[in-house]
Length: 180
Image 1 (tube, helix red, strand yellow):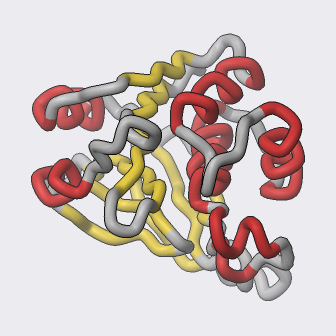
Image 2 (cartoon, helix red, strand yellow):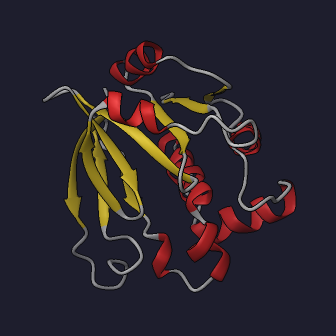
């Protein structure tokens, strides 16, 4: 159970903002937003935590738009240069009370691999520059799928674990378990 395949969005009206879609084993389809193509200046420059929250909410089954995610975050989170993962996880738990969403301040590479193999979605922050990405497991070839900035790429978990941000303010991993 988890990520099955990606495919290019062919709908002309929504292709600009959502160039790819993720199709999961259970039939769930998640559009992948490209933050640089939104009208809002904040989303274009600092919207990667909002994109992570958007994909996480879709993973839980909530169909929120990027505009609704931005409006919620403005009213409920403290803003630094961007939003913290701790605040995003707390907000997602309020929005999806039945979902299994956990924030881990520190997580080993082995624990990340174990969660990915179980079909969980991982959201974490990278360093230099600070950027939020989503990791999914592709069980066919044993590699991770990195979802970020409207793109889906194959990466190794070792490489992604080395990129994690260790800063006290931005560190951590959000683990989302899909509940049916």
